[in-house]
Image 1: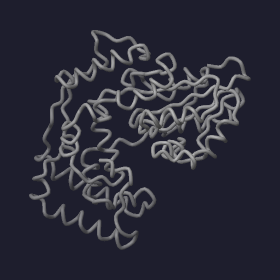
Image 2: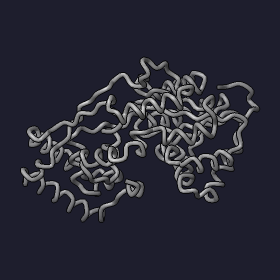
Image 3: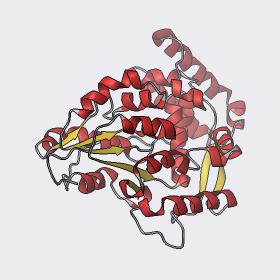
Image 4: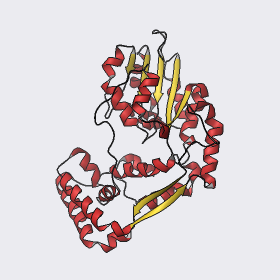
Length: 335
């Protein structure tokens, strides 16, 4: 992507969640100084964990007047500027156009990583649990499938459409995440002229079913654990109890991409965004894996294991005493 150094170029990586976004952002931040020497600016405004999330959040709520100082800072950059936030996928088409209209660039490109929903759905649920969500996997999944065409996880075209329409298919790159070994390395190879950089321990931790259920049992207090590690051993102990006692309560949900509604969504994505998809498509299918069995802990577990329930209740009480009432991520209200 490097050509005329005086030409102002802007690359917006819009995620979505659970497609290596944190790895890409942390790698770009780690390599920031080396990239700058080659005329590449990674602008995250020092937000944690490395994405320009404040700008995306302001744009997704149409607070463009508040976002203008951030946009002015971005517009001062020369050469290639990279912006990255998975929250950019929350913008509706009107917000996308307002954002792009306020960005000053000679060349603008948008990057999106499309992940097989069979892999993304359970990952999304586990991530929500970390941030205070309390519903079971079955409840959350049922809500998605009540209106699948209007759900942004099942129908990613909803998130991609506004961006693709605003910049054009030739400026909108879709990468099939499941075919990429290392999204961060691939991103730097493609968009930073091979400025490959690896950093240790950059991947988000993938929680086990027992760990996720232990956090869910905390009923909103799990967000406290992000800033306080005093209860790590207690959560580990609760996870182990759930693992040991829950073996007879694990059930599975089978999901197939060959269901009518999922095939319709897949076909519409290929039809609408085909020119933007960077990998070849075989047999009119985006995803090679077509079925999955998702394990979950049946609700009967908590009725049958009073001791584990008492352990979770006691842990909630102690977290409350030390850190205060439960907290939920405001974005969970959208669910």
